[in-house]
Length: 362
Image 1 (cartoon, rainbow, N blue to C red):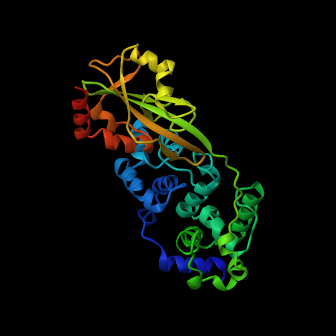
Image 2 (cartoon, rainbow, N blue to C red):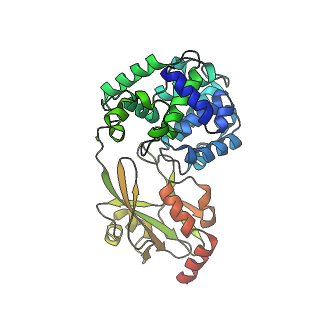
Image 3 (cartoon, one colour):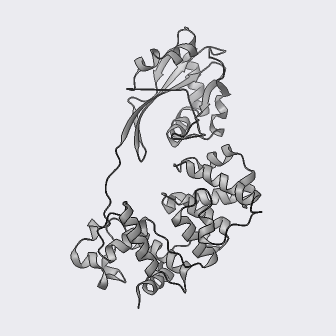
């Protein structure tokens, strides 16, 4: 039995039950693929269910406000995916009358849709014989064929794509693409793969050569940048606080946060010596208390954020500069925020904590 047929046979016996596998609706397939980019199925599934419940059709998603989309996305990370998702939904709804492109090449024209996503949608929804190549596929192919070309190089991307094309099952493209991805996720796992019961073990080069744990090869190119975030959590006696929306093309674009002072370290002096902070309190005395015993480290793919939340006690009304967004503390949960802030908000801004904190101010 050829490679593709073996994987399809394994898939039909072992595939997990997923809601997006019960449909060929391109909206649902597209939604699932965007959510599952750089996300484990277990983490992405609740988000998929939330999105399909809140936005049953592409028209519903297109009509939503960006803040609604970002709030529902909160915790998944890589928020550009959510913004691209919203942009594409509006394009499909308004320009294409709700009809998704039906070919790989046309799907590639959608914002946020790359080679992998276009291949998945085209094969699953329209039975087009275009192969998917994601992390799972790289792993399966590199081990089975003993390929040591780094997968994150131009040469590697080209080599694996060409190989994937030759292996494509033209009779069952949807089943084959889902099979090889599922095989990589469940059988040929990154760590401790089930080689002893693998249906293709007899012809796996990596297993023969004892290199299963060494493949695939990925060159480490990324240099981690350290940043130091001092967040100011203003607390007024009238239960008001300040939040700001992040702008620009950096991390967390469009999400909300507390006033931020970024410096060369996380400490009290960085705040009190900052001109922006001095303008905020207008020379008045303020009590500044760190929330955590020591700075917490929030790790992104390319940055490590050393962070402390400083509780700044103010009177009623608070002394703040103009153009600051003053909100009721009880409404803080309505705003889309990065998971780093979401965890802090859940701890500090519940009713009992606010009441206890305000009592300590009096």
